[in-house]
Length: 243
Image 1: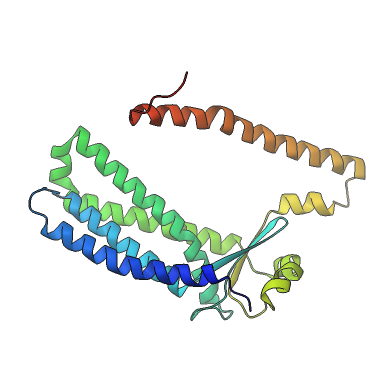
Image 2: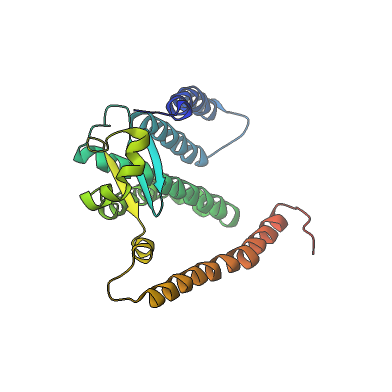
């Protein structure tokens, strides 16, 4: 089986850097005397532990992605869980859910900083242990909700495997014994394959309407939403923005 050298080396290299950097980071936080972190240091310690767990997860469950038309195949090609199993499939979903966990970490960090600026007495009084426990639970909620939804919806059933089989096996070999999750955008596959109850003219019209809807969704994001975000954050960071 083919494994891209970058995909093979980078997770191991990242794990080594994480195992070096985060213990040093934890030590510096614990021994810092001149700058008073207060309860914030416990949140930073939690972030460091999350980074360590994520790096170990990346190494034990190296997740690769193969794109074919309207499908995305997430799979394990090496490591202790690459052989097809129910545990391996859930670990693939969990690997994807780490992204959700990082959102939880960012949310917790933002809320803490916001409350510290607006009501630091409240933070000093209630963050330990309630705020820290809520932060951990919030990250776990993000992780497990993403993992469960991904596990339930991205089914590696026979139909999904057959859809991406030819393209996948040309590069990686047989997919039968690999732990994987497959996402197929069924709307697009239906429009591509055609529906029995639609005439060719109606099907063509539906395709064009779908593409028009996609464009109508993208344009406001690019023309309205993104410039607004840029201007707002530019002002927050003191960046001069053109008129």
